[in-house]
Length: 288
Ligand code: HPA
Image 1 (tube, helix red, strand yellow):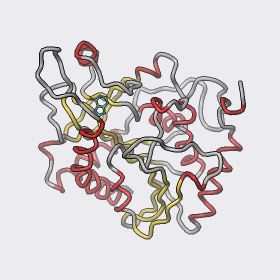
Image 2 (image 1 turned 90 degrees about the horizontal axis):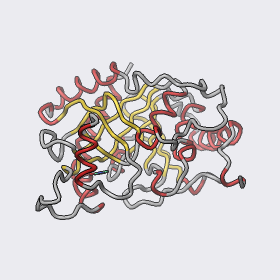
Image 3 (image 1 turned 90 degrees about the vertical axis):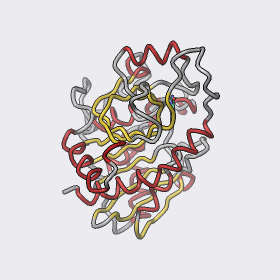
């Protein structure tokens, strides 16, 4: 294994955390937020923001995808100090799962206890239309079940246990807060709870795969989130996962749908990012 292939040590992750701490001085974020595809506008919710491009953190991986800018933004939402990661890392960029989840461990070292993670995903049922927001109550981490999992390899007990219980991946209490926020904002009709399935991507799914994913119990499918959720649960964080539905997957090769493109996903995500931003602001303000 070359140095490049070696998972970050606790000490290396502490170095990254220290760089962020030194640049953000008086803030002590207790909430971490990961902005999904096209949802970079979330950073506009942050007041008195200090922005740290990933390029300013020596040795930190860079985001390579359109719609993901690649920076940490630290500041306030209401009376809470938050850290927003705008520009997540994906398995399909070629990053190993331990690299994708390094920001979570950095958040843990910064004493962040609550993680809000958003994503763009396809719907696996016509009953969840484009534009819906799905509050995640559970997930199927397909790559993680098959070996592409951030917890594989040496386990540093300072982060968490060798064998992780994932019977409650997403915190019910946070979903309740999100439901209250949704009701106050008045967009309850389009918000439901559901199961997210992660695939590696970068291809979108074939119709047979879509039917398969539906049959195993998934409501939405995307290419992110589960590695971060697992790493965050491993170090004891509570997680609120929220999906913005950008497309309804194609169930039959005979369907006359135009081909799905990343541009279409970004278009819908960007259009609806204001809703996600309002929801996150409300949720953060309601958190104790
Ligand atoms: N499939 C997988 N990932 C996605 C999709 C999809 O249909 N839409 C947005 N991200």
